Image (tube, rainbow, N blue to C red):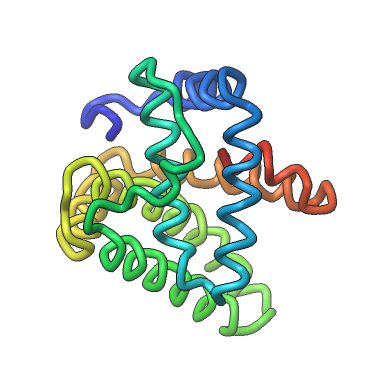
Length: 179
């Protein structure tokens, strides 16, 4: 998890690019495989697959070599990652279904970046710190709704925008932007 007192978007983006660049083939195939399995299972494997992608990224950061099998090393964390993904997906869908008026669009612009960064921080806590979903979400809430709230919102906005660009490239770009 990121340091508590320092939010450095530039470092995080360059570190993410390094993770992808060093293992582009396995990260791309892993993202494709995780996406297909998540879709085929109607989202049931969405959380566990995302947790597997985080495991692959963390191995790279520790100068280890990630393998496709890392997608399935859930170590008893399947239910926790599934629940976290389900909660954030429900929040996204619920917010999306509130309407298309300008007020809801502005509300979405405020809330979506927080949801993006919240899932992005909760999953590593479930994986690395072995937290349950409630403890992970509470910890994330404590972090992002702090004096650094605007910076967390900005990080979520930038990461969401990067993935939106990947989506706009006929979905193929997500194979680069998600990892």
